[in-house]
Image (cartoon, rainbow, N blue to C red):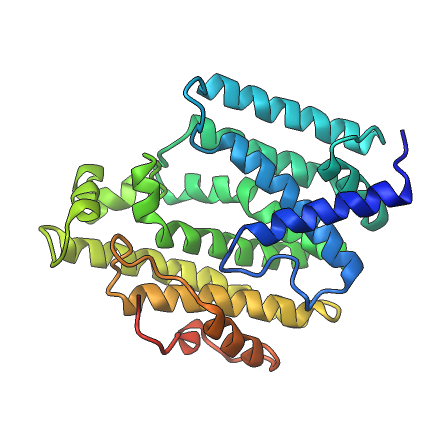
Length: 312
């Protein structure tokens, strides 16, 4: 059943409310984007946010992996109905309108749901390749949807976008190692832990240590320097994307790129202590990065995006 114009407006309003309610280092539905596309971004975000909540650690005492997978299956069915023109949930009403208006590929949303299903089933990654595979479902579809939103469907641009979104996803993993440990989620590849003579049990001692440098801290710093170096290489390889897309997307991508680069630098500035000092950006950092994003960045390296304030 087709939604009225008023219902669609209300649905977009509900999605914008969801987007505003959740803080992220990387701007969501930024005001750099025209209002119509901003609404579509909010709908995409609201879809993913709801699925993430279903997949996340259970809030109810009777929640189980099976019940969380059932909830995701129901959300997947809602996506099918959405693309068949039978949406009723505000998120799907908005998403159906955006998908039709901007020809958003359904598979990207399906891949996102597959990533959330993996979140329920998988809490360890054997090697970097398996982590990248997860990112191909959890991060890359978002970048491809943003490109489609602006009319881009070129395979080369998709590949550059995949590099950027994967790098941003990895940055988030390194930023949240301590928090994820509390939820028994380990995104650091087990192969890399072994390479630096570390174990999950050792990481837990870092998470519990009040101050100082506990045993194994030097190996931890070497591991994080290794992960950040290859994350930075991925991010820097995506830089040409910021000048190959139509306005006003270049500035939005520059700001997103700079935000990711700044978080990597902030982790380094904190001595890789993501356990007691979760590196993050504040409002003043975004103001500075916003002005920096107004310039082309053909030769800019991510280390130049270091946030100058002291880590907190």
